Length: 143
Image (cartoon, rainbow, N blue to C red):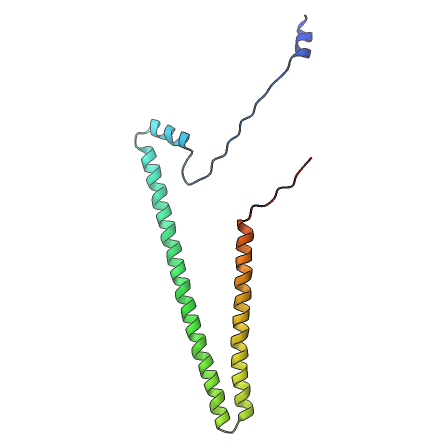
């Protein structure tokens, strides 16, 4: 059999292996190689990841506590302003300006209701966006 005939009848096989690893730490095999190169390197890498996670969690906690405080101040301020507007409307009504007083009371209540409705709709929209972001996206199927 000639070399050309051998090449024509030869079966070529190829294998491709692909792996993917994601996380705050290197793949365990890579971590072991770091340890082989420098004794204690794996422990240092893990400690670094732990410190970074603790730092990130403390920042998230600070942001959450700050947001809660801001929301409380906003709610308290809105309550005080609403009481002032409604009290002013009642005072105007008692002074004989019942139309103006009633308008002040209705305007204050309408503003409160509209802010409440807007806040709830934004909250629903944000929750919907977050839930969509967590759902896996479907990849197109090819035949």
